[in-house]
Image (cartoon, rainbow, N blue to C red; front, side, top):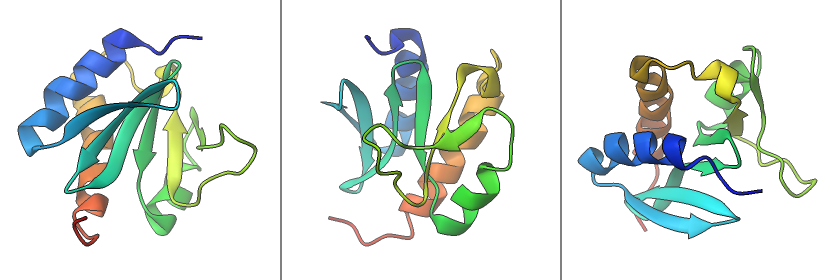
Length: 109
């Protein structure tokens, strides 16, 4: 299955203003900030790196699930289904800002 190119374009427009770079990976796209993966698009879902605490909190929300595309869920990562993103860019931007804020706590690579 291809990835959601419209969602990817929305993500790219927002995160490149922060200096993030786009990379094709795992059949979708990933966005790197200071050498660390921050977010991505896989199929029709948004992938976010939120860290263990914020990731666990996000999993309590509707339409959010563990990032698990290989039967080995990644701790601190979540996937947000389209229903959790809405059509309002403000919701998408909030999610991406959470990922950015976490990734900026990591050492640059």
